[in-house]
Image (cartoon, rainbow, N blue to C red):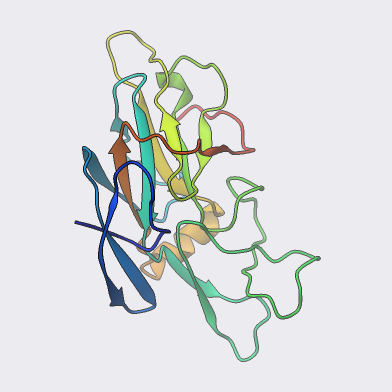
Length: 204
């Protein structure tokens, strides 16, 4: 049984199996009649050395993530209060932000300027794959990825998950015990494609 705070899936034979509550969360329990694995993703803006996960080339995978990845102060709030982030992230404060909106402020560059702060990201390190397009994607509930061809021959493509934040803020929030997210990777999952990021290819 897998617990997620994401919308209920109506496709791929995934079934509702009740719900539970935790502090600040409503967890929807799902039964997934397909092979899957669980990956713990720390609150890392790709700034922590980690071992990526290997997958067969050409494998189609779907992503369902949950958890309150971080808790940060709301920009300009008086008295001070905090805002939790799930895998979809939270808004960044900008000059166009409404005065009563719950946002967070950042002074440095985010990993992806088009994604929300704290949003889950995925990348295929470019030195391990045959490049036919982007290798970096941002999470949305039920989105799917196709594992690309591999390079060099004889190895397996790998995927690395992280979050959209600045390096300094990711380090700051980890010092406050930001837990990151849990990602359920479902094999042969026919969901909508995960959106590409704006950050371009990286060679990690």
